[in-house]
Length: 332
Image (tube, rainbow, N blue to C red; front, side, top):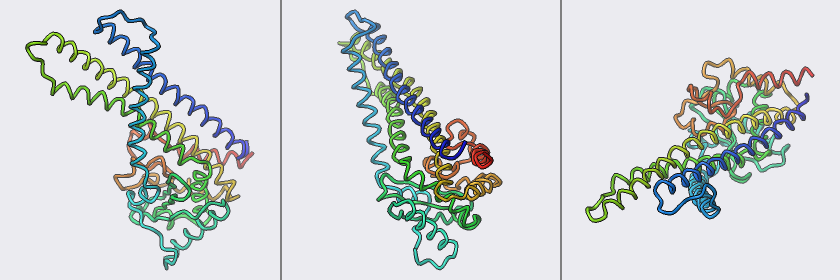
């Protein structure tokens, strides 16, 4: 299998995973509809059928509004572009006139790749306090894209290896991975917002009071709010779990695609393979030291955290698999 076949395979896998993501969202809506039917059957006064088109539309619109609200909130959090993320991770802008030879090397590589790819020169940030080998590309559009590279990467990698890493990041820019990642992240947060709405309903019970005149009716209303809150909390949490897992799987496929594309851009498979092998030999495999690394992990060249949870929600394939994919293609 050559690198073009690997690119096609990664794109095909991504399409299927996006379909699974949409299916997970639809199943979440279906589960909430069934919970609404059960709640009305238990607490309502009129008979309820298992299929009610008007109720299904109402639940879908309500859930859609909650997801849209959550997605909008997350979108505004990410609206600042790649420079905001780079700054949060401790990056400082690279001065094109820097006397530092390693930083000069980085600047010229990014400039070369920008010209070769035909995209505007992204802003470059150096994570000066990060000794590990890592990098990232972030932004919503090519005009606000930023590339960040750790101090460890520009000092420990050869020019060919650093070029392979930068080629990988430019692949994310050209293949639209940043936009895809942001859309999935916003939708996933929207699903989480369902669970947060359930929490809000449950907390509202603490402020509710049953008066003496309408004790029976108010008690029924409180039970309905309790049931609705629990349903939103549990189903939203389950939906978030599965969409989060699928989102991570999409990101892993895009990493394989970016690795293969980096080889295509640089015409030097040994470069990116050498960088991955150096990262694999590091004690923390290039993990960042900043506490902000966890929320930006899907932007990074290699997994940015070193916790046990990364194996469940990892946005990156194991380093051994990425290296084997490049080495096996070289042998064919």
